[in-house]
Image 1 (tube, rainbow, N blue to C red):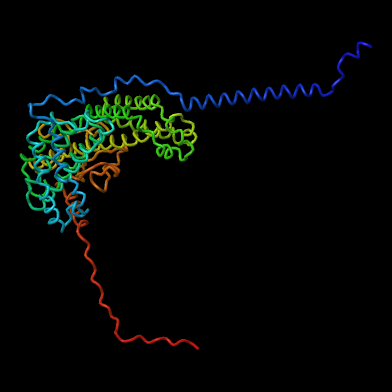
Image 2: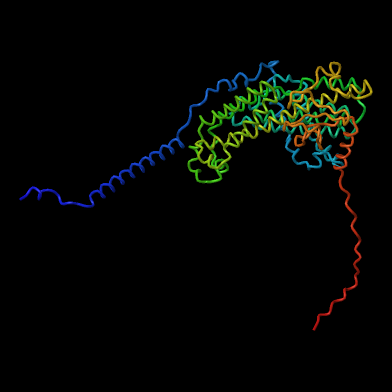
Length: 497
């Protein structure tokens, strides 16, 4: 047999099969690589987290939350005593008043007087706190004693309710002609709000405290313009208001308390409804617990708060600008749906978005309260000047130093507050940081182009107050027209055949 007979027969498709095998292997390798890449991405997406940040510079200490040394062995916590007393007085009955009565519209005086007569224990508890307890002994009852999840509890609501009652009482006292009593009630409300702003608390506590002070100051115009008030009495009131402005250091502490609350309650924030709201889909709900990364969430929040606090230390304006910039940038960054779907920390992103939006709003409101407080001081100084000199000044600088230690600044510009003597308007440029030349329709309203007031004793303010009074008057019902119908039966129209 010849040697050629041992060789395999010639296969013309051999090369094709080899190419096919190599192609198949290559496809398997590519598919395996893709599967490995997908599994790696899914693993990172579901399980990877960054280390917790070193946030020791931001965390509030237990010493800051611990109650201060009591002024006496029996001092305890007067603010907690007030809150407990308010709970015992069924204060929630205030919500039962109709909106007209809550605003003391004409014709509701008797209803309001009857209602306030049932709130004697609440007023007694309030007077005890304000006049028999040192504010340094006050502390929000739940702060530092309850788990952080309860730090925004009932006490803030109780204070909000008593503030409403005091404000309502001052309006009734004014309507009854008891000017001094009304002014005393307003001063007490201002003192309460200012003292509470100096106590450690969360943003909710701070908001309630600043709102309480603002409620008192907003009532001063009606009280002080009801009858002539001598310059020396105005000077006493101005002295009481001086030094009651919200402090940046206290607000910084509030932000640090908020961070601690966020960090310690982070594990409770896993909510499928939040994720669905953020993504607009239910697809990721089964793995919701894996989509909150504590390290990532705390890092983002820490960097945000640290930047805002550093800016706040330079001034109110810088703090609000930084807060606004960071909030807008974060909202823009996570606005695209693809960005939200590809985020490995969507639950954390959602809660950070909620926090920054509310923190920005509260920060702006706080700055508005600062501006309006300074404008109230200016009102008193301008009136004292007018009573002494017989006319209003053309420039606020002439009020210094006899009527003011220095010209109040607009916190949105860090420049002197604006005064337009021709139209008798005091104004701040407001949270949009744009000067609209004192343009506003409703005084002291944040939604106006500028945040301003008419001079309380001027004709424009008097006109505004009269317009508001007329708006509150009930609209007379038009008399019904007498019917001219006859009792005689109507003729019927014949039906055509």
